Figure 1 (spheres, helix red, strand yellow):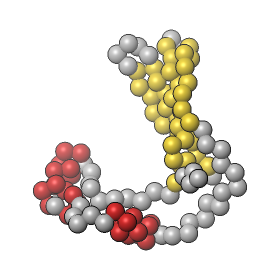
Figure 2 (figure 1 turned 90 degrees about the vertical axis):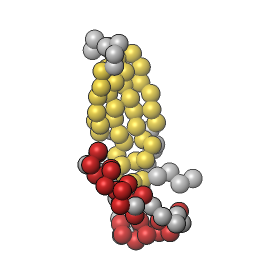
Figure 3 (figure 1 turned 135 degrees about the vertical axis):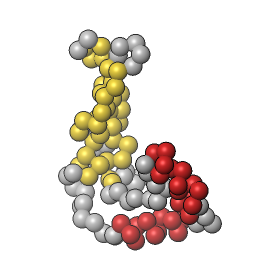
Figure 4 (figure 1 turned 120 degrees about the horizontal axis):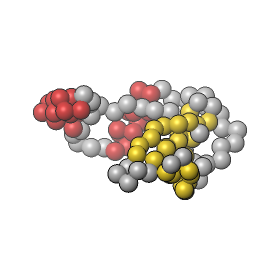
Amino acid sequence: MHFANSKRDEYGYDHHYYQQFYKGIRVEFGAYAVHGKSNSVLSINGNFHPVKNVDVAVAVSEVDALKYALNYIGAKKYKREIPEEEAWIKKNFNSTYSPKGELVIVNAK
C-alpha cells in the first residue's frame, strides 16, 4: 500500500487513504482508508486484492489500448471533439477531456 492523501473533516476526524500497488503498478479497486482522531485509529475500511505471479509486461501500447477502448464505446462524438467543451474544462480545471491510458491490474474473474 502506498499513501495517497489525507484530509480532516469538519468534526476533527482524520482520514488517511492508501492505494494498493503490485510491482509498481496500481491495483484497481485496491484501496484502504484509515480513520481516527487525536492520533488514535478508530476504524479501517477498504479492499485488498491478493495478486500472485502476474506478468506485468505490457502487451499492448497505450495508443492501441485507447483506440480499442474508444472503438468499444462507439460514441458518435466525445466532449473533447466539441471546442466549447474542451475550452471550458481547460479554463476551469486546467485539464482536458482527452483520455489518458494507465496500466493497472484488474481482477478479471
